[in-house]
Length: 205
Image (cartoon, rainbow, N blue to C red; front, side, top):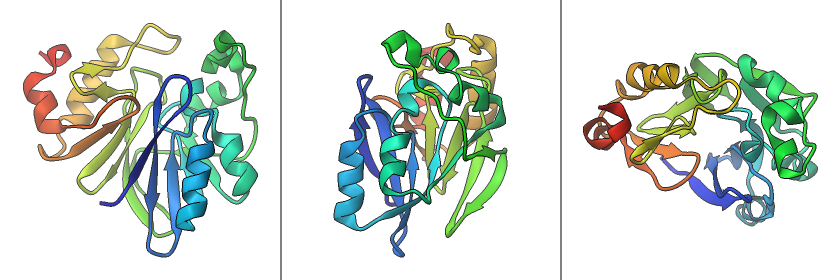
């Protein structure tokens, strides 16, 4: 499938753009300093119809205003268990970075299972552990997995809402059963595959 990765923000978050030939697109996890994302959308004449959030930590949400300033019709989607994080700077962690960032309105719910937004059809996996509302999005043979699993590592669980045993269970029960060739596109760092992580990720042994 066609997608674009742009690294954004102080913590080098992978923000993903998924386009359709119609010009509609989805934006996943826009971080702060998201101007390059907006420039790319303008250059490619893309219209974001939705912002999908893998979870509610500040580094994955602080670019929302930059997207909405240009594309006011874009809707925000996050799992219900992380909605409170978006509205509270102490819960989403932005206050620790000297920011008081919150999103208080226009938030839609993600639920596990098949989902359709405009022309986009995909599967939502609820993968709690990094946060209680963590989600991954499966588009055919590509899975956008946020901070649940990385190449050779897994998400941290020492922040509020984290649970290490729950995270490993989520990975084993939701991510690893995907076809081995499925490409995993994490929230930070390079991409990997289900097969590679099942074989060599030290945290899953």
